[in-house]
Image (cartoon, helix red, strand yellow):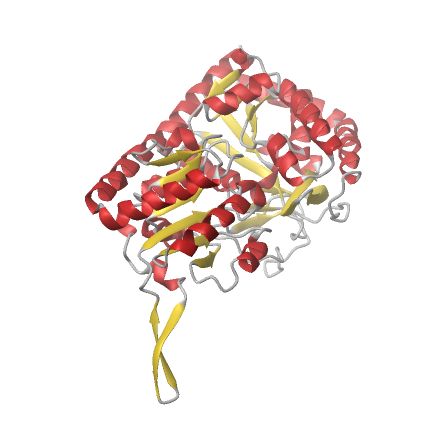
Length: 489
């Protein structure tokens, strides 16, 4: 194991994370131990600690930032003008979520295709120090971290500036794309401005709606909205993945229309295929039924009575509108004995859902999955359910459709731009009656109209190919080159 900093007190056999390993992530080097404020529980008042820590960190490092500014200016002059170097920064990289998963696919793809791209975030509080994962993802040592309000297993964090500056000198960059308006992003944004690095942002998270959903204190809603307006004034232009959120950026967050750029996202669709359907993966997570006994030995068989399979795959948390889905499913499953719902994923709301469906044989839980198992669970689903109204895009919707699985989504946010209503799934308002009717139609389609169902599966797969990694990364880097010319004439 190599070192990410010039000194370390860690040995190769030291435990670097007290959490279970996250699928597909391997530590390739480590930072040395730094002092950090002990991880804190959530609190409205405690969030007010964040601005002084952020601005204090910038102020204390102004001499180093100015020195870096002159170094980068000189280094940039000695490079070809079309040599664009980009850093993607997101606080939540050390968790399992759509943003982290997407960036961890995008950045290595860019690097493999001759683009210079890096990825940085904060090490989660379970790590004793910062680490580098997969040789390209820098998880910086923390100065401060606290649990996110109303969002267990996720945190607000502020990185140490010193290690970040050393990395920027070792790996000079021209542009920084900030993925969320988080405390760490504020710090990186302010530091970059002093260091003469162009910063812009990507609207990946509907933070105002999250805050209204998860935080009870009303003053926090206004406070967060004001902070976001200030943030997106500093980090322009702003990339939006869809028209809905482009409108929110201009109306609620006061970003001028000429400073909003719509760019599609891409996914490694080669990992998701209709060919994975019917390989027996779903049955591994279905309950086992006892069909009889011989002597004292029970004979068990896999549940084969349920014929229509629905799934939700993603982070198991309330802002995904799962409370609504649970209520709809309870009423739907009460009418039919041949339907089942699989929850795939992990999150703070999971235990509540398990209690809600305790004793209900129509609902199964597969836990957090990755790789071919995850792709096969998508493929084995007959329909994918995603009622979220807070997703700016919807990676999981594209992944489901890439395996040929039609998706039912809400009529708000990014997912409804992906689905073609009644051809590749359904686009529905958040209304229980309409969702119940749609589930009835899905059941009938699967059981009574097999040819029409197979046709829908083919359309889903074809539609998903619009969101390939190749097309999205090309569009992004073309835009980055344009920004480069504007910022460094």
